Image 1 (tube, rainbow, N blue to C red):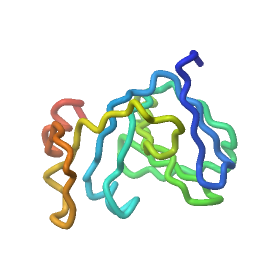
Image 2: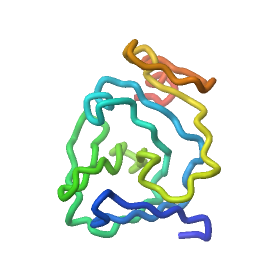
Image 3: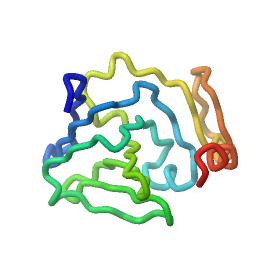
Length: 138
């Protein structure tokens, strides 16, 4: 890990996280799976494949699609990551991490699946589910 390491943890602190190369651009995912998983949009950071966990015995994964799995702490239930299986890319809830003063909310995906009962005031780039799959080749 570099000097730019970002640290985080789950609610019970049985799982701790160290991330190198964290993307400071936070996004919101409004897909039906993220909404069902967390009861609202997933506000997340792209942590790429440079993630280290301690307390891995407390992490359980659920394969939510052919290409991804979601991890959570079995002790407290905290959502830990959405991981793309092919490249080990971790998309992680922003609130897991300390010191996020420089994070910028700049994009929203699956905007076409966003329910009508909420809106964000921030001006961001928005993408439909189709546009996301076209951009990332899934």
